[in-house]
Length: 297
Image 1 (spheres, rainbow, N blue to C red):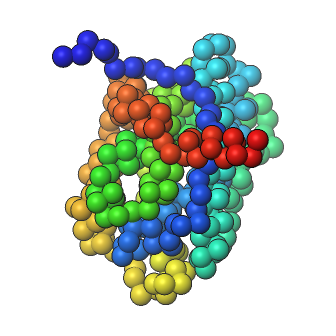
Image 2 (image 1 turned 180 degrees about the vertical axis):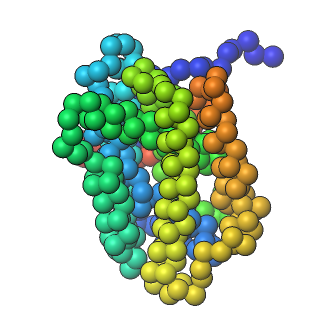
């Protein structure tokens, strides 16, 4: 038996990766547009959402007095910026295949840039609004860590013949979500940490994510040039695919919220950090980048 202890923290830093989408089909889970597009909603949400994370964290950084936390926050910002670029390129690939995500993405950008954006406020109200947004990010990051852990172990997608490049993107991103799962929560706790705010923002975030994902999947299915509106978002489809292991189960998502709301909760209790770091170390995307860099150089 090994005496090696599992790591509890990681050195949060952005990594250079490269994905080649030329061979990735529109339905990257073969014969399963429902699972494909339910997961594809992440590509619709993440570029604008992660740019917003970085924007809000830049506003919070001057208030951070803990140097180690400040270093982790900067690493988090670097990773989120890299994620936003990677998912933006998937949106461009979708458009090349005849599915233009722009109308839905415009709504997502309005949500983050306008509804949740900066407002002209007096200093007291500005501080309140910053803490609200940090709490929202901490709640979202809890869900992204849960989803990241799920995709790392979603062997049903491999058995279904899912496109390896898309799986690598999702697993590389998911692994980094597990890796930096504590940063947003620690930042919120450092600057505020109010339990009523934590409860309120988790409730709002959970409802908003379900609504956005359902609407996003419906949009993609309705505008898919191969499906042409013949398939709709139904709970029966979701439960069937979840039973197959191709999408997360409703139970796993529903139980994430009460865990987050336990008074003694900390994100380090979630996910398998060693599994995440192991995947990052072997992700083909990094090898693809290094090979391209050597060839270009």
